[in-house]
Each structure stands twice: as structure tokens, then as C-alpha cells.
Length: 182
Image 1 (spheres, rainbow, N blue to C red):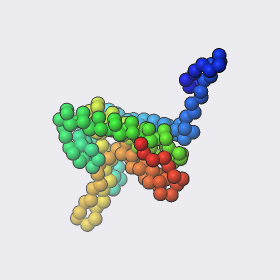
Image 2 (image 1 turned 90 degrees about the vertical axis):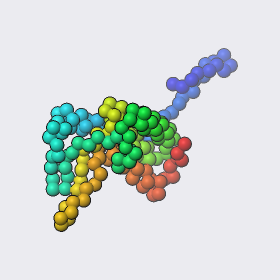
Image 3 (image 1 turned 60 degrees about the vertical axis):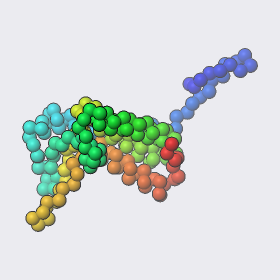
Image 4 (image 1 turned 135 degrees about the vertical axis):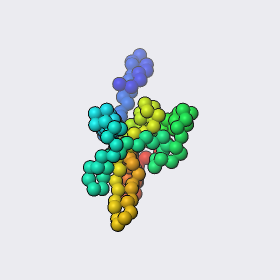
């Protein structure tokens, strides 16, 4: 029930309705966040990846522990407390802006996509707050002749963010027109 006010000796209460697409976006954010944090906690404290070092899973995929003190792809590496606080503050502002956008979204796909991005951003933000760096662990690579080509080391939060951005792009180009970002 929304706010109530008095009109002509009667109490009138307005009903605020949630965007019908908002619930799936919130669920997407929570699922992304829980899967990300559960995978990192399991790898750090149960599997003990720090002591195991590189673990070959397939000929093209390894589990490795990397502490990313920067942003995407390791850019802007900064191990100082001030640098980490700035990155955390920027991430918090981004999550708030994305949440406002998600609340205004007009399509189910855009809302879920924004939820995935939010969940991934919060997951990496929790790492930055708890560890001073983001826990990355997944490494794809290809051996071609004598050369090994490695992709960036990433985590499930990164997967959620990339999937969310891809879905948001799909929705903006091919879906129903979505609400503009605030």
C-alpha cells in the first residue's frame, strides 16, 4: 500500500505498482550474486585453489587463482587503499544507476539483463571490499603449434556481466524499445 492522504473526510491510499518485469531482474541479480560468491568461497576455502595452484580441467580450460586489483581485464591496477575505495565507490554508483534503469525498464529481457549486470557488479564489489581485490579463477586457452594463447582470467560475476550486456544489446537492437538509461 502506498502513501495515504485525507480527502473529503475520507482516507485515500494510493497503490504503487511494481514494474511487472522487476521481479525477474531482482531474481537474476540474486542468482548471479549467489552463484558468483558460492563459487569463489568454494574455490578459496573448500577446494583450496591457493595451495593447489593451476588445475587443468580440460585441454583448453584451467582453474587458476588471480587477485585482480584493477577493473576489467586488469586495467588500472591499484593496490592502495585509496585506489580500492575509489573503485568501490564507482561500482556502487554504477549499481545504483543500473538499478534505477532496471526499475524503469519496459521489457523482461532488459530487466533480466540489468539484473545480471547488477548481480555481477555486486559480487565483484564484495570481493573488493572483503579481499582488496576481485577473485578471478577461470582461464580459457588454446595451444596452436608452439604458441599458447590465453584469454583473460575471469569469474562467474564477469560471465553474468557479459551475458547481461549481450542481452541488453540484443534487446536494444532487436527487442521492443527499452527505457533510456537515467
